[in-house]
Length: 320
Image (cartoon, rainbow, N blue to C red; front, side, top):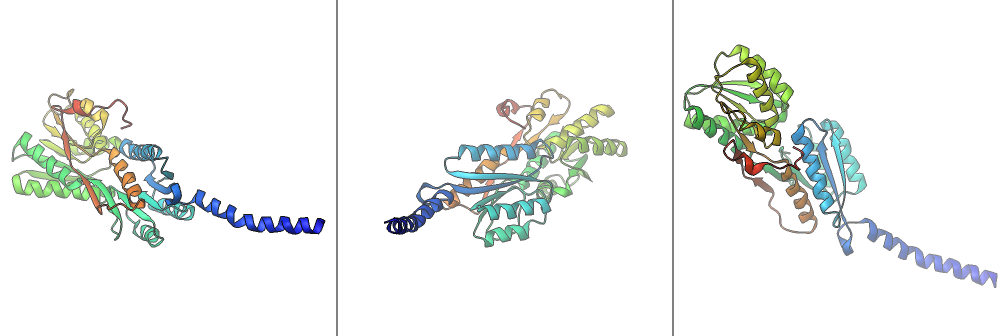
């Protein structure tokens, strides 16, 4: 009797194992029978407010989609660390990855993710790999708008400082190219002075303080970033200079907006490039996993903000 019971118990176990295994498979995948998709998010470690806000908005959107997706978000300080984190996401079983690299050198690891069958949505900086979807603002048009704005305020002759950021790769290149191409077309007699800086107010202050000592007259400053521009404005104030009529920016920073009406002698401008655009990248990742048709590139138009319309863009809840 005991032997019959043991044989019956073993038989039941053997029958139940595949059933339990199938249940376990349904609970861990993505997409079938109501399962959640696995989405990985790669962003830089905080270097300034705009970058911090990208990670914030990406995670915020992932939380809003928590009934559809399981997600992991990683931040890194260089391409090597981001590559390691991408490998971790592949091991985790990510079905889509939203990547926001701030450096060159991510092409090989991104290709590896694509080879694994993972959908990759690139936010902002270009990753030159076939098959990568991309969401970005219009960096080139930001330069076009900056050029038009400066010429509108100072005319077609004068001294203009360009603050490029070589370490920002395609972002700096596109914003600078848009500016240079437009100036060549509409105001070729402007004298342009190009200097390198970084997307931080500390670098904007330090670098522009040096520039002010080397140029005794400046009509306008084409800055690519609101944080940099805040440093520029501080340098102008500390030097007691009153020749500069325009300082542009980019990003859409609340603190910078609030400075616009306070500086009556300088036209402060920002070409809106909101970090909240990353939410579109997360949405596109989910659309791809759901089998929806998605354009390979989604470009969000440029909006210019200055003292005339800044109030429309104030947001007390914004982290940037």
